[in-house]
Amino acid sequence: MLKKLLIVAGVVGVATLVFKRVKASNDERALWHEATTAPDLR
Image (cartoon, rainbow, N blue to C red; front, top):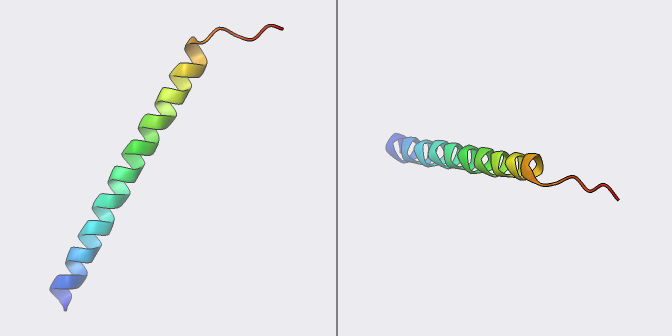
C-alpha cells in the first residue's frame, strides 16, 4: 500500500514539474512575441 502511494506521489510530482516547465516556456514565448512585434500605432 505504501509503495503504491509513493508511486502516485512521484507521478504527481513529475506531472507538476512538467506542467510548470511547459507553462514557463509558453509565458516566455508570449513575452518574446510581444516584445519583438511592431506596435500597433493606428
